[in-house]
Image (cartoon, rainbow, N blue to C red):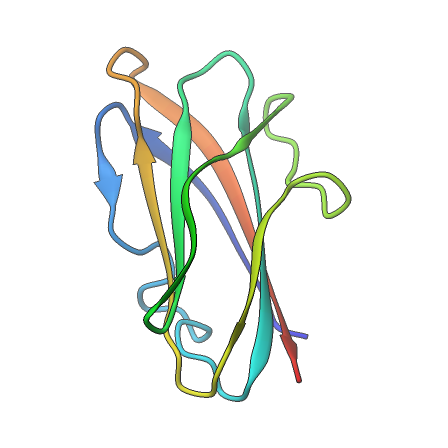
Length: 116
């Protein structure tokens, strides 16, 4: 069960095309179930995520759950989306800070890949 975790900051009004770019897990080696969990710091802006597997949109404009500073995501409460991908499918996680005021919004994403 491969796991990929990102702990990053999204600047106000910016977009990251794919946080999986360059990862060993960007392309699925086998047919798999991909689960994406997300959390962001309470009291900051709002980070939204789009989740695509291959050419299938699994989730669009998914706001990350608010958590205490530097905590999460929790696998019991912070599941954003889950999808089934075929071998060779690209996992694309696009993030965007949708408010213009905070200088940055800390967030954390966890991707869990379960091979079928």
